[in-house]
Structures are given as structure tokens and as C-alpha cells.
View 1 (cartoon, chains in turn orange, purple):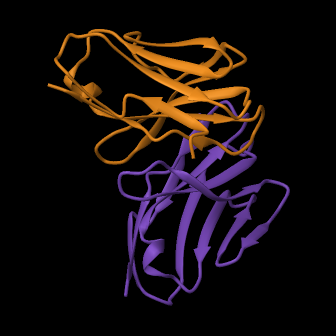
View 2 (tube, each protein chain N blue to C red):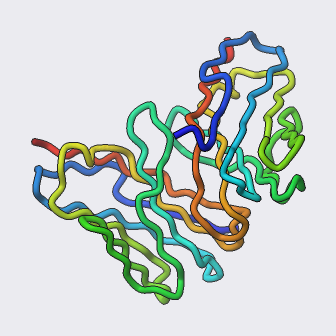
View 3 (cartoon, one colour):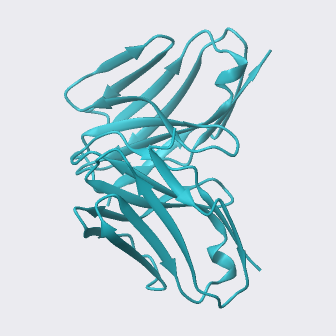
Length: 112
Length: 111
């Protein structure tokens, strides 16, 4: 159950702050993702990384920056947090190509 | 880009009845269609998937059908149980680097 892990589980912060969410997978997968799930439960992909290269950036504000120090980690850094950034952020990983994604437990971000 | 529509948004069934959730997609190049179940406060988890070279796939009480011509795919749950209550998401993918999710169906199974 710890195949994809995220820290922290909860994050409460003030507007304007900078924060990071960490993600690690021990599945040996080549591709990692970040998703945002808003209050209406819509799941939207933000980034995907394959072998440390950013492949897709879905019109996400440049305040969000993914950083991958190695194949097993994909961290999400957010600058100048805004109220609208409040959501649950999920990390996921999958083997290379079109295949099953395994999601992390999620990080609930609340911006006050 | 791809557009995935999912219906219904909410669904209530009596325990033991069947539930059907339908999704349509717009890009004929999509070739992988997973279904995820998300329980309250939990992560999405894959329950079944289908690839474009297959028309139907079944796993115990769960089945998925795909109609490539009409560009729609459906999730079928038979003999529903209270533990099937959750939000279900369909998704479509072309390359594996981009997944487009439906808007979710909240399924309630009434004991």
C-alpha cells in the first residue's frame, strides 16, 4: 500500500506562501504524474514526467513547478499560493506507455 | 484535445441490482480506457481497464464494453453491494502521458 507515497497528507497555509509536496514511488515505474482534484471532485492532470523529462504541462500556471531529482521522485513546488489552489493533489505513477496508474494517498491543501 | 463526458453524475440502485455508467470520448486516437473507483477521502484505484483492440472485458461482477465506432465505453456492475458505493471515474488516453478523466459518477447502493 506504500507503493506511491506523498507528504504531507494535509497542508494548511496562508495566501502568498510557497510550499512543496513530495511524492515517491517504489514500483520502478518510468512515468509519474500530478493531478488536482477540486471541490467538485474533478480530476485534472497537471504534469507528467517520463525519465525525468517533462512531457505534458496542461496550461498550469507557472507558479506550479514539478521537480524530479530521480526516477522515483516527483515533487510539486507551488509559489505565491492563492485561494483557488485549495484542492487535493494526487501523485501517480505508471509503467512506461499506456498503462495502469497507481495513485498516492493525496495531499489536501488549504490556502487561507 | 480529448473530451470525455460521463453520465449519470449520480446513480442510486438497490442492493443486488445492476449499475451502468457511460462515457463518451472525442478523439478516435484514444486507445486505453481505465475505470477508477474512489471512496470518500481515499485515492482513486483502478478497477478495470480496456484497450481499443478489445470490445469487452469482464472481471467477476464488473465488466466494461467499448464501441470504437460510436466512441463510447461503459462500466457495468452486477449484483451491487453496499461496498460498491463510491465515485467512479472513466478516463481515456492516447499516449499514456496524458489522461483525460470524466466528471465522475457518485454511485449509492441502498441496502
